[in-house]
Image (cartoon, rainbow over all chains, first blue to last red; front, side):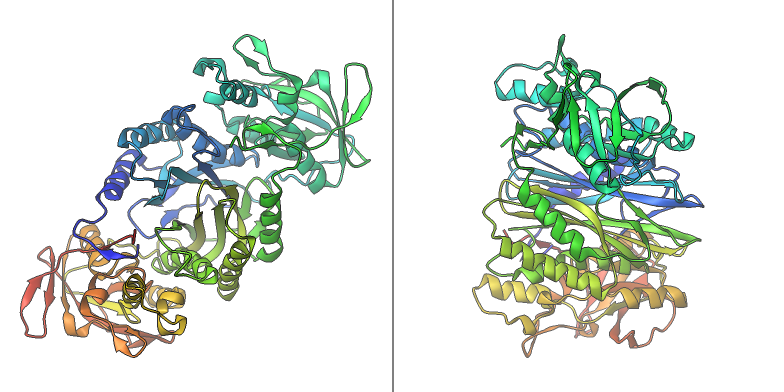
Length: 320
Length: 320
């Protein structure tokens, strides 16, 4: 903090820190949390640490007129939890850096924290620290989630082999389809789309890792085609997926278009490869086989007509 | 990433990630770094992890017309390293979340990264991950530094006892005094002030912890009076410091005013308490005894005239 002398010590920030501190709670991984220069975390013997950071920026990742503050808070933490899930890890602690402009209502921040801390409680992940600042405009949040995984067992993107099956959890495209409706100024009821209640697949990721049936994994944050391309690139293999096999989400009662399921981001489902036959339900979540990894590089989509087409990695742009 | 379909996958971000990835390098704590859902970090046996996050926001923590980009990058990482130093820890890995508006020159970002990565190299701290995003306006960076410390040995703010000596490293007030000059549109040559080249006191923090001579510690980011108040509050004791003992920084050839040394933030020196007599130089850095902890609560300043005055915790406001 630099600048001009002042009488009162940045009251807004202090209140925010106190509010977070009261709500944060402990956790058996956190030796010392908010209120020191660093948080001190205990690491289970024989484990490695996982660290992930994700921005949530107003106007880029959410809009205040589209997303209730609780949903923004929930989605903010989900982004980090989902990354831990994709490594087969256990989330241990979260850190929130939050910059808020002076004209943002305190009520908005309170409800944002409610959403975030409510989800943290569900996953038994204490908020162990972070930073607060005033921003020049709007809201910027950076979430850090620290997790752990038994040594050498983290599931990377680079472990896929030709011939293995490709699986996804849940249904895809619901988030992008809901956003497309919002952009056309159509209403989306919160209950109608997982966009408003994304689920980090932590239990699924851990089940797969423990059973030793997963060779590579990634979470679907950029969209199936883009995230599958990451696995192909890191594993030096290709992929072939069947259009009809892709489980499409519904918005209300309508299944989303294939393009949303193929390229729509922000679903926070898991995409993984396995040489084994994985059950169609894991930890209460639907698991669907959608294709296989190939020796020849590049990605192909097999249509309903049986024809193979090249599948480009087409992510989705931020909505501004 | 949510929103509208697009042809090219957010090229700017991709380039930025690749640039960081190339420059980041490894490190023997980092099992897997940039390029997966999480970084995987090895923790030395018998150690606990330290985690700290700090925002660096344009218009709040720096101004592009005052601070060269290399300095902003260097200061950004210093904030995190200094928090690790204040726990007596060893920095192991850094994570950078960086949001940049479309109108910020690429050259600015390159030079910012040069400053940050140059300092990371000096401290042998690999950049192991992070996030990039487009911002609505200006530059927002969030730095995460992960460190380690032998189990149970982290130096907290809460360990000070009445009767112990109070020490600071280096000289104080230089950063605030340089900013005050900049605000009055006076020139400050980079070589004239540690504001432009802050030094995280990692080696000093570790020396003190290893020798077992430090009971509490904090880094001077908010200013001596405010940070000393944090130690008093967490340790349930008071403090008494001598105005004449406080080592004042120079800007150019002039010693800064006492108020800058007492209340100016952003010096990144260490403030610590000890029952022992600590040498006047540790790891090449000057160490000065400035007072003692007291049983009676509150903080007092002893002037040159020998009179005791109440010392309020007067931090400094962000400069906007």
